[in-house]
Amino acid sequence: MDNSNSLLFPLLRYSLFGRVPSPLLYENCDWERLLAFAECQTVLGLVVDGIEGLPADVRPERSLMMSAIGRVCGIERSNGVAKDVLGSLLAEYRSAGVEPVLMKGLGVGDRYPCPDHRACGDIDLFFARPSDAVKAGTVAQRLSASVDTFYAKHAVFSYKGITVENHCRLCDFSNARFTAMLDDIVSMELSGDLSSFCLRRNIDGITVCELPLTLYAFFLLCHKATHVIEDGLGLRQVCDWAVFLFAEHERIDQDKFARWTSDLRLWPLAHAFGRICVDDLGLPESCLPFRLVRETGNYELLCRQILSGGNFGRLFYRYKGHVGKKEDMLRTMCVKMPRYASLYRLWPDEARWCYWAMLKRGVRRLSGR
Image (cartoon, rainbow, N blue to C red):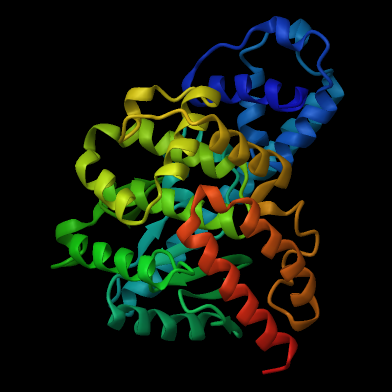
């Protein structure tokens, strides 16, 4: 780890779990560089909270701190807008006779010590029944002039300036066998009436439906796993898992979690993510839903990918936002195919299928078919 990385984690440990950082670490800190790094990882709000655990004489100079606080105020405003949009969306879907399940985002953020300082992204909604997904698609068409259905797992549209994703499945792996396994897990866990298995959570007066907690914890692992193999992800997503496990570990079925992790062969990534949560972010090891095995090679490989790529690998893909367009397919292949090889040891069964899926998709797109 370089100096920015080693100084970032003590601040996150304080903001997430109250572990006071040593002031000695920050006596000669390059705060401008550290705050820029935190923003790249979309944990600026958490780092600013962490700075409160330091004495005044080692904090950033006033102008730099005020600039950072201004950007955190922007995060707070974005969260406020997202909550307003979520409330409106739920009203639209419920009036159409369908109940969405909130995934990630505001739901996980609500478990943070200071929820509004977690950088918010899209609003992700899951529709557990095929008939509900159809109704949700009709609502999306009514709310937006353009609905992107390029990917089979979700439809994407913009509503009141916020990107919304309507998911018909929790994750879509390149390995079709893993996708079928997860679909079976979801079907078993969500069988019966929606109200019988979904939890209700109040987020600033908005009542939302959430996944059962064991499935939720496993989904968050799957989500991180697919992104780190495919594109990359930032520290915010790892913080999400740590905070979720800290809040809900007593209600997570460890036997189920272990069985599902074995089925999808996720143990190398589970242990690597678990080590970041425990050793770097300060999550009590007892909060993990499995016994942690510290395998240094996988941990260091995962850390390098997260810390060098920025949020969702944007430093690897400077043109991100255009991925999938024909003119960008060749350079996407040039980044992703070596990536799958370099990360193969973290999830061999998925990396192998990612390689062939990208090759077929790239040839098809470049040939104009």
